[in-house]
Amino acid sequence: MVYPNDADGHGLRRVAAGGSDMSQPMEIDFFIAVPDKKSGEAIAAKIELLGYKTKLSLDSESDEWTCYCSRFMVPTYASVVECQTELNHLSKEFGGYSDGWGTFGNVESN
Image 1 (cartoon, rainbow, N blue to C red):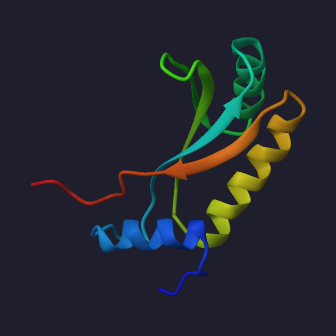
Image 2 (image 1 turned 120 degrees about the vertical axis):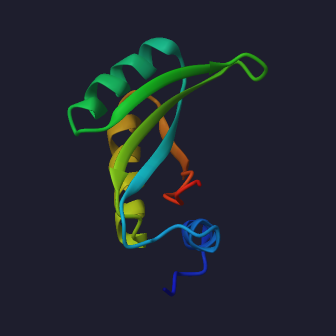
């Protein structure tokens, strides 16, 4: 599979190189930086309506809030970019912004 030469393409190449089957779904976590707990809770409630699982977390070292938004999906470039765009748009109302994504892939462990 050929991916664009940007951060998302690089991330998808790393997942594929790790042995994941890129034609099969996997849990992908999208990160939203939020200004405070109240805003994070509002963002999480709105995003859960779209079928994401959410978790709000405070980094004790940096004192920054993050809303983790998980979705089980096939990791295509278009779908990853679409999710980030959607989450960024929804979170702007509350002062948040999309801050990347990650996954452990779907490699079976023996």
